[in-house]
Length: 210
Image (cartoon, rainbow, N blue to C red; front, side, top):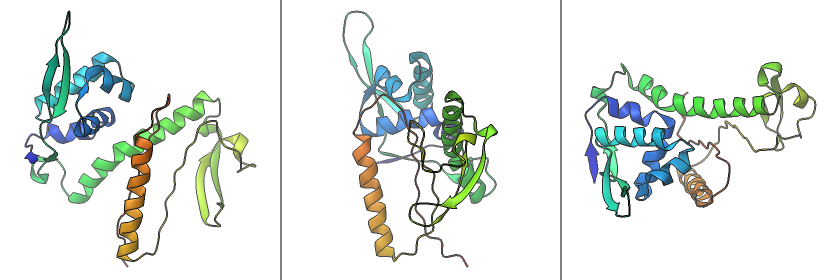
């Protein structure tokens, strides 16, 4: 079932990274406040605020309450399997500007995480530069690096990070197979649980414009 939401604020909620994560979890299964807070890394108060916002604009509802001594534990779920927000109710003037509004927060969130990691390791990228080189497959690669990595491209930080942009020449069937494999790989790692949070973003689209 797809539910249509007609309040402009609904889209703004989807563009906030932690709120998006909460909604993503609830699309998969019912969750309690503590489960959502653990996944997002937010405090219980910040998580509750996001859940209240999602409830106010029609995304989420209380599935049931688990009785116990003291305050009952609420289990939340989405109000539908999918949500549709008409382009006409948004403030975007064009579809292109809307697309950028949708993806920009995700890229910004990922880049902020990378920059914070560099600062935490006392290797701020502001003291580094841009490195252009061949990657292991022989393709050209351009990336931001800290000063101490400029002459040794084989060194890596203590945590993994990877940003890559590639143009592939495929048939439609091969592209569909790649998409299936990418989603299966992501699903494999979504089922794991570790002490650190990693931002993952991916995309695949036809680019035949000449």
